[in-house]
Image (cartoon, rainbow, N blue to C red; front, side, top):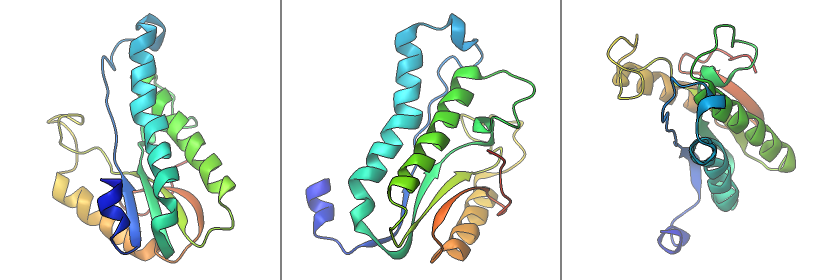
Length: 163
């Protein structure tokens, strides 16, 4: 895939989506270590590795977007639950801020994106947003963000999510 993409033009936007919530209802301290490691690898480490591999292909004024979740907000976590998923997304947010800091001279920005609570396999039937509403919102937010540098944590409506 990388060889095929090498022939393509630079990208205005690289959107990295990765997420698993394996046994999310079980407290992380009770999960097998290898399972927690796999969740962290998928949700946090691999997306940043992808960003590192492709950042040179982002056009000036472009964006690297990493799908996060407000469940990864440490300051909003007052109720607990989904601890391995929450911790993995908090780790993604931390790694993404480090990535942005390491590339602070770059002429592109980094966005951590919370899509909202969406009716998907992960969000479930009770979720408040349909896929189309979430997707349209994210597109609008990201189009408005093109040309801006730095690292931000935003939701599908453009609101800042607390770290």
